[in-house]
Image (cartoon, rainbow, N blue to C red; front, top):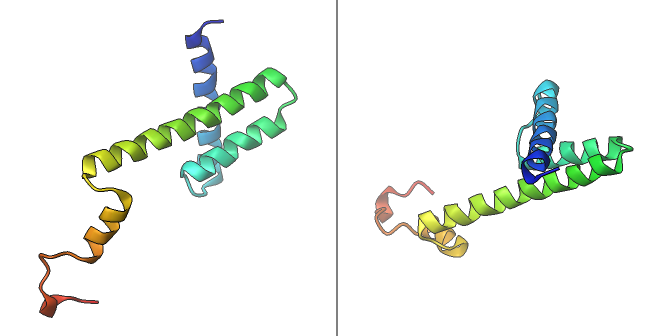
Length: 99
């Protein structure tokens, strides 16, 4: 089996978990997706399937980390700077503050 075969199986697991979330009409977010993928692994007796489930979870986490990293890169702020920027906007006049 080559890498593209592995990737297809991983993609199918992620798709299966996503479809289950949609059918449940619950929240659809990364946490819920990881929980659903984990359930797929728990429900399987096949060791290969469990290995692919673990790989799918790793792929989702890596994708999330990459997205967070890109977001920080493009914002130009670190996490602490970003929070400081939002709460101490120098362009907002003191008399117009709502909070």
